[in-house]
Length: 161
Image (tube, rainbow, N blue to C red):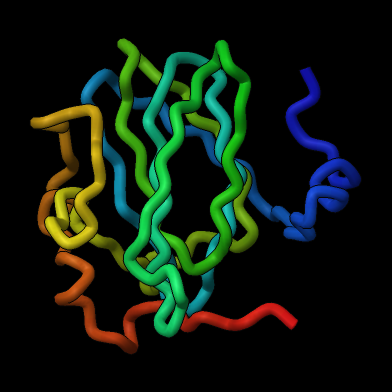
């Protein structure tokens, strides 16, 4: 299976250069996110090698016409779908199978001092997660709601020319 070919993505309008690949392993009910980087934005190309997840992206770019809107998609090793998450979006997923191996390409290096996050259960976002009581990291359980994040800690929307 071909998982990435730059020419095909370019023809689809994705000109992103990826500089790092990551692999995440999680068990059923785990919820990761919603994560983003403030000044060193990361576009991501997400794919599942084994298992299945519900993957979510939230537009958190200050000034964006779709600020606070989210989209979700089911990804699995069987359906072999991928999702592209642009810079300026918070990203998260929950695991639907016993185990999920998530592979994702990143357009920028991880910068711990630059990380931000939004609470998965933010009532203003009203994300329709397919899990009621997820397994969360301590860090993810303490993230703020989007309305409580200072504007300077959110990425800025840049219109495409």
